[in-house]
Image (cartoon, rainbow, N blue to C red; front, top):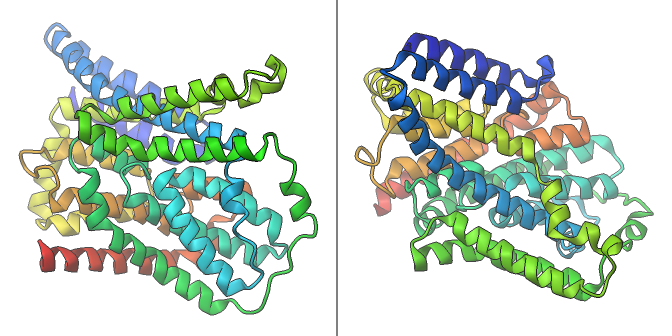
Length: 427
């Protein structure tokens, strides 16, 4: 039984990794893999009742992550529909290349901590397409956005899916992850930014129709400002809500979404149904990335099957026996996240190591959040931010390896060294 489940999982994982050559959406593969793994478990376990009980327990944990992501995605889509991101992108108006490097790096770094690295990348790469004409320069700035977005998402409980998973799973707290991973993540961003800035000289030639494109708003200034700041406040309120009520984070995000839903209905009450259609939460719910939600569902349930059958605990024992050092294991996981998706890697680590082994706030969990979040920058396919940038700008895989990967590796290991040093000095 265990062999059959492992074979199905490996085949499914391989199909997910080769999503683009196979031209099969990874969400479909993940769902089939999950169904097959749990079906094998049910058919070969005693009466199937044990498998059903395990599945119900795992589904409860997975649902919390999915509802959180759905709520956060809807809030972000609502901000975008109201042109709220113009408040950020309008601040990027310098033509000096070196100034633009640092302005873009810091805006991306902090924005991805509040929103998420995927959304931030899409917003800023779309902006770069408007303001930079030279393709080589545009791609270098895009690579910087990918590195900064992944670094910014790693230190925030709501900035990256994997960090969110660890937060919801009880492995980290919002306060400790911010305090302990902020500086390493900042170093991970600053060093590549400095190297890129060193290469940049002179001024950009901005596209003459950039300003004209920015004035075609769907909303007035009051609505843009209100929805943007309300959305940001809703996202930032989630850790506060969890601290006060001790309820799961998805309740906080759903509360924030509900408040935004009510307020947007009120401010658009004078518009007719056709005019306010694309500004409504109903429209935002239709625009969220549903395939990604289903991918998370499938892959997390597949990992749950491996956990329920004891495969992950045995894998943890094997890693401890072969590698032995938890720091080295975590660094390896981070580098693997450049090749395969970091979501299943973190989910596997959560199943391999229990809170009894490493309690909440342990060095391992926080280092894992950093490594899994930033390691994906090493390859363009290693993170959702990289894949999004690749799709928007048609970045070639080997161009990224040649121009960006080394910068990302230097930043990754520099930040990791700072994290380890920080731990030994202050723990």
